[in-house]
Image (cartoon, rainbow, N blue to C red; front, side):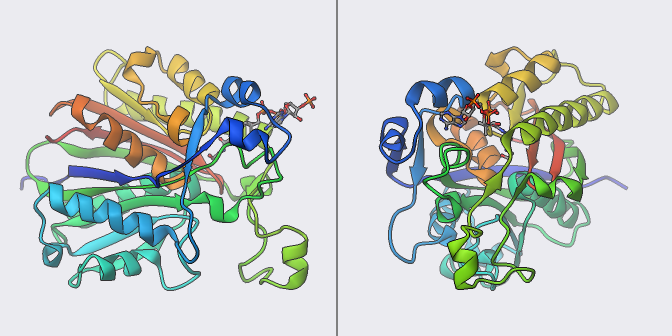
Length: 329
Ligand code: UT7
């Protein structure tokens, strides 16, 4: 029996217009452009402004662009998965809201929360539905409105993150392209270093949790940095090895955009020259679940059919992983 593969057949993205520069951050918190650029590689990030505007605002833009460029009738879409930590509401899931507004009426839709690894976890989940033959047009969204959970007085977090959303269409093919392999890991012991404490069932919102700033991202950067480098190096090398890949026959490494020094360290270890590494952290910062689809969107013109592509991410949880794709168009 021929195997069915899940191929990415289109990618689209959306970032809000407002550009938050390092210079503006200098006016908000005790930081400076030079520190941010040299320690993280970030020059600016986008922010979604406006009362009542949540992730779905960006998700709808990204999905509508995707439907249009792939000539997809919304009625044909049969599954929508949205990876995020900043859904519009605790429930219902933002995938439902986006589907409703985009006219996707024949799909089931849900969110996945795996922080910065969310897009990869969602892509693997979605690919199983396509490979099994049960679903034929699946949209995977990765998006976050990080500005909604940041304390702009905390220089350890507010300088890194930004808002954005990307989306891909997955369709079945019998050609050996698309998602070929994926390896994912989780370690809940890492939650002490990166989390948002309140707003869930353990610490529901109260005046005290708001006062204690527990509805903001907490990050102890150094241990996260170390674990991110170690985790991504490990999964990238394991996925490449078990698929007989070397940096010579892989065209693109697409790392989560959390810190330029992390990206360079993983690339160096895996022996990728930087011209084979997708980087857009300088203009978007760390958009959590959106970094990888936004990179694919940015570099789409430069990717050729048949290119071997390795995606890798590390994030809160801890969660991490690497995915091997063969580009399908
Ligand atoms: O995306 C999901 C996973 N997240 C990550 O992968 C992020 C991983 N962590 C990081 O990227 C880095 O740890 C940060 C960018 C968050 C911080 O960079 P760092 O090089 O680890 O800085 P640090 O926290 O070790 O601080 C070094 C120094 C400290 O000063 P002293 O104690 O050496 O005098 C900090 O107070 O830099 C100071 N500092 C800053 N100075 C200016 C920390 N943040 C800032 C800032 N501006 N924004």
